[in-house]
Amino acid sequence: MALPAANSDNRDVKTLRLTVDPAHLDAPSAREALARAARILREGGLVALPTETVYGLGANALDAAAVARIFAAKQRPSWDPVIVHIAGPVAQNPMLQPLVTSLPPAAEKLMAAFWPGPLTLLVPRSSAVPDAVTAGRPLVGIRMPAHPVAFELIRLAGVPVAAPSANTFGHISPTTAGHVLEDLDGRIDAILDAGPAQHGVESTVLDPCQSPMVIYRPGAITADQIRAVAGPVELFRSTEPLRTTPREALPSPGVGLRHYAPRARLVLLEAPLDSLPARMAEAATRYAGLRIGLMLPAELADTPLDPVLRAAAVFPWGHLAAPQELAQTLYAGLRSLDAQGCAVIICPLPPSSGVGTAVRDRLRKAAHPD
Image (cartoon, rainbow, N blue to C red):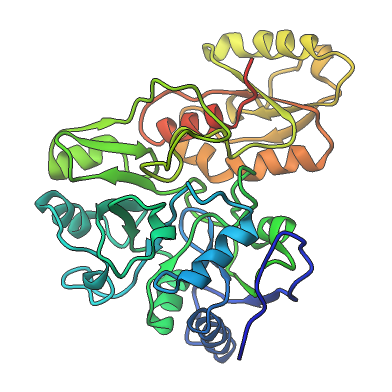
């Protein structure tokens, strides 16, 4: 079956919404949905799939034309590489071996410790990987998702799956099927709906070929966890300002770009918890007359708001002291406040430890430059 090519007019295909319960993958309805989605991937189509991080937009990673459809559907520029997802055994994986020329010892240790899971490794690519996947760079990002639906879909398809986040380029990443359809309905062939994503922020992206190793994008697998398994690691620090268009192809997904962004102006606050109510009121005063949204930490749920904030749209966020809670609902909160017509979203920054590092990274890249 020939599939129509996707482009930016959003009127090309009827997007199938296939529902799968991750706890009952042996149910006849789940097997039928997975088999249908796997067939679409093998035939060069696009399938949005749930992972434990966010929903991804998948295509056969070895099919250059299929990968091109990802870029067209997302309106993603060619200089931004995408991650390849594989399934199967971690050791001697038959999908991995054709994609790479070598694996450093650190990569093998990290795979054994964290795969399947939210860790992407940048490793030397083989000639089988289309240039579009890596933006012409010599390293390809590969991970093995832990989500049972994603894992089973890739296994059934029998091909590695290139899958960036399933949203239009630069917009808030999707953590539910509904979020995907807000951006891509009519541009993709199908979506597997398996409920909300678990972690809520994209995978950690690590280059294990350098010494010390370099984290290009923080995520649920933290620097401390990586260090304990494979040795010295540091966070990538760019000396360049965040850009909409970089000067050259990016070394990794999520580097140096202003994205994950709501339509509203995102205003970030960093202050001790007892000072946050006053700081939020001060920020709201600067935007008097505009519809204000507030990402409200759970620690302040029972704190009376300043009168300037009483008309604000409030998203009840997680605890600042539990950054994994913040990560799970970060993108859902930003999308919710956008949908309520907020022109400005005020959001406190969590501490820079553990998964809080990933939350801060996404918020800083989404914020409006002052």
